[in-house]
Amino acid sequence: MLPIMYGRGIAITGPTGSGKTRQAIAEISRALASRLWDGKDDTIIIAKHPRSEPVGKAEMGPYPVLQTDNPDEIAALVTWKTRAVFIDGADSFESPRIVNLYRELIMSNRLAYVIGNNLNWEARSRNHMHKLMALSDEFWSTTLPCIVKGCNNRATRSQHIGDKGQRKCVEHHYPNERFLKDFNQKGWLGMYVGSMFGDKTSEWLGAIGAAKENGIPHHVFKYLGDRRHDGDGNAYNLFGTGNISTNDKRGRIGAVLIEHANHMRQYLQKHPVGDIFIDEGQFIPGLFDFVREYVYKGYRFHITGLLRDFRIQPFGEDIPKLLCMADELRVGHGFCVKCLKYRASDSQRLLVGKDGERTPARYDEPIIRVGGSEAYEARCRGCMEWSDALPKQLYRFEPFDELRG
Ligand SMILES: [Zn+2]
Ligand SMILES: [Zn+2]
Image (tube, rainbow, N blue to C red; front, side):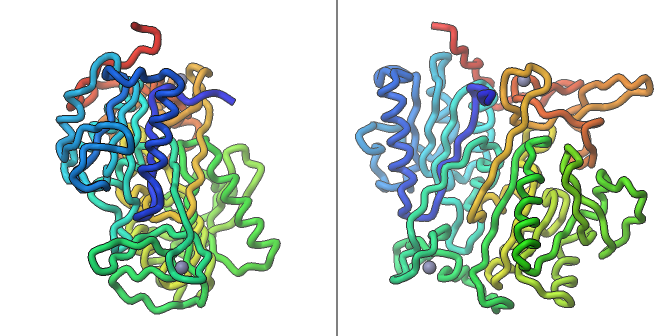
């Protein structure tokens, strides 16, 4: 198994009171024990938002921390020695610069950890947490059983009761809106994400196969404009049938074609079933609001999607927000075809010239361009390229070099 590049993002998320900060403290202790950090200098920076527990105290377990709501103050501590940065209460930062900070720490070859609540009381992402999730490579979810007596479901949401938060499962959580149940079952959201060629589709097709074998009624939906797997030259019409296959062409399945999430609402009115599979969710407008509502109506979702676009930016808004709402997250990374040294974290877009020569796309091209292996490659962050100048970084950190010092 190839390693992921040293620089990477780790999101530690879960509902209120599920032990996120304890997880982070354990990781800091491991860094100390492995001499990644000598505990004195600026090799590791630990920061927390003042609203994160313990509220107003500049400490995280036994470790003193920088307490701030300003991402610039965290950035100011970063030196060439800094290997890792922990940001607790990441969901409480209102400044959008928290996203620049996290991205630039990862891009400068550092380990960056964001620790925060995945959702607010209404089951929507808090502040910029969804973008931080989409920039991450690893997801550590902390979980405990739902707080309701006798309920053994895993708690993935937080309920506001009085002046406190409580962890709850989907069945016992009320998002301040009333959604009547279409199915008397616990709604659920599973996300299959990663970069292109990360094989997210194979695992998802496996789940469809299992539903078929067990006679579970289900629908498969895909975006009308995605014709990559249409080898038969079928006409693609709204509510018609399209094909989905894995990149290795070994698995193949039919899907109902849609252009907007509202088309799924229409389709389900006529053909109501409780298990829904959606391919390449980043292409489908309105997906987050639809899924949020229908999860509370008792539907179970399996959705594939890309974490990031070809610019190494979160792919739109819907997939990032769904990451925060997911009850289960599967991440698949392919292998970097350029250096063959690291696991791929991202998708390189390529332009094919008349002579068949492939060159990196420009950074300012439109975000959505449906394509397969002719137009994209799996690459690690260090091998990503663009043919034009990149936008200026906000913090411009000196890249961390493992061999220096
Ligand atoms: Zn429960
Ligand atoms: Zn590479």
